[in-house]
Image 1 (cartoon, protein in one colour):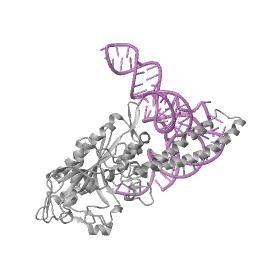
Image 2 (cartoon, rainbow, N blue to C red):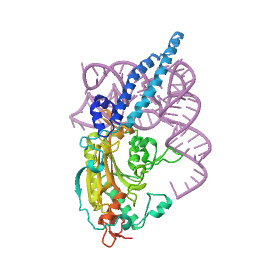
Image 3 (cartoon, rainbow, N blue to C red):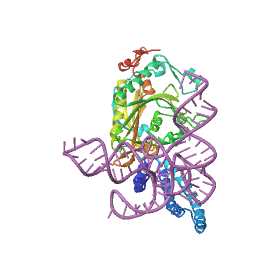
Image 4 (cartoon, rainbow, N blue to C red):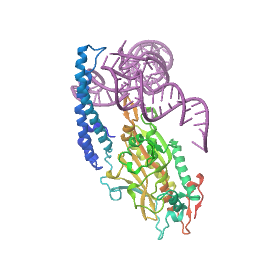
Length: 405
RNA sequence: GGAGGGGUGGCAGAGCGGUCGAAUGCGGCGGUCUCGAAAACCGUUUCGGGCUCUUGGGUCCGACGAGGGUUCAAAUCCCUCCCCCUCCGCCA
């Protein structure tokens, strides 16, 4: 959530920034709800102080108390309603985007390209990952429905090696490896900003108050929920491996072929908690880590800064790494690296003590390796005979030298 | 799944209807001592919110897992939920 006090102090500034995410109305609604709440709170406090008695009250005092309490009860009901309305408005307001984030809301036309790496291969007739790797979509459809697939044989081993490579590189940098839960409570979903805006994309477990995470960012955000972390321990750097689940409810008919957009995939994530003044440097560092992995996988890519209207509610700034996909003949999103500043930390109540003052930490998350990258790897390393040469970096992690059908 | 026990400040741990926002210990911060440090000793130290004034205070309100209830009055009594621990059963 945003810093309400800061927003009251500079409503125009906040409104302008939030408007770049297309959420000016949500902000206006919040300010109105907050004003209403602030009208009521002093009145309630005043009445409450009048109900205080020291020790046993006299009969006359009791009579007077009765009247005050009746008035208090009515006012408290109003306050509770105002508070509910204000909190509801608060969760609708996104994190203001950083100044360096471009305007616009279209990922394709408004994103700012930062750089490119590698030479996109230009085959006249490139095969796609389904033709090159071993995936079983037909049987998966029978077992699980559309948008699921089995990774089979050498293809599965390449994916596992890629996860292991990312974990290896990150732990060497001091990141702590974590295998987190993938079922979480509503609290973690709200805390990380996935709810309420992304709720449509999340699976809920029937009969339980549990949700399947769309990314381990949710589990990792929850890890230090409600804690006051030791300032000396910051930054806390984690790398988590987990399966991720997404309903892809709004994506009907989009990317229906192959494993590009599926309901379930695996990801190695970076998740960091740090001091506010460190988070922008840390953001660049996380991006660099991801780029190093993609380079080791020898996948041509470009880095873009997503426009304000296309980043998540929690994000202040997001870089995407788009891998070259020969079969699509274009770059496509494979990794996201995001600074959520204090937005998640505020909701999750993760704070640290700085010269006596408690303040929220900053949190960041970023893909290190994800299944889509392995798809890109397979496509980019195809040879004329339809086999795939696996990058040397993956061999020590159990990958075969080649993948062929 | 069954049977018990428990959730209190950064941590440990008292309190079990008003005198309790809360003993005590540890930790933290400041100081005395010291060339310096340790030890010892002294002082200080929960969080959130509103208003307010020379940003550091003043003042009022709220919070003892969460939410309801009883009562003039709840950390303390009752109900619901969540979580943790121990034992038994089951299980990868």
